[in-house]
Length: 99
Image (cartoon, rainbow, N blue to C red; front, side, top):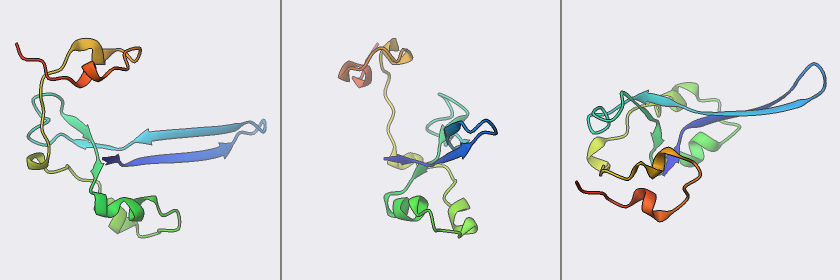
């Protein structure tokens, strides 16, 4: 899975170098709506090279990728609240929890 994002490096007036990045979001699809009104833009596998090509100037083509990922190609399940803290890096964070 690849998320659409932007990355930039620039130099401040004092000569310092600053790197920044962001993940691009879109409105949540019907699967995500009950969880959140937004979701990351998930890029279809066939578009990864197109998105990552730094020489690509096809802005309309790139913009066409900024859509909701099809909900029928996704799945959701309840997980533990351990996911709410970055200190938990464990496979139990994604283990399905049934109540």
